[in-house]
Image (cartoon, rainbow, N blue to C red; front, side, top):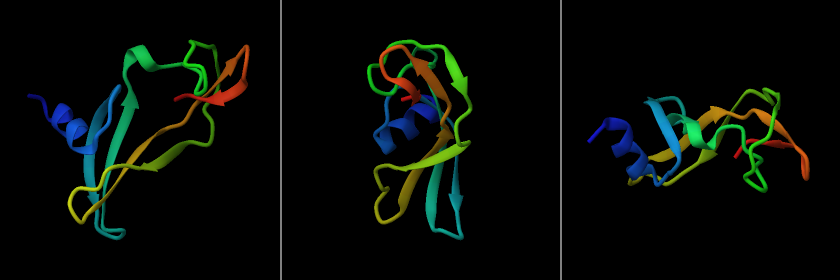
Length: 93
């Protein structure tokens, strides 16, 4: 079993590739750097349809995920945006 698969299971995440995991001592949390799987890239965050890219958004963002015991954990990833015909400019999900 690959390390990224183990981390994905521990953190309760699907459809992403775990690039690396590190411990942030200053904030006392685990940071998992992730990216969407190839099949999930460039999709509208609301309807999940493939859309053309718009821009890179606000850069990297963090989302809270399942904690590992008493240690907080977050996911960190780029948050690009796409231009959906129905919903306009939205973040990729």
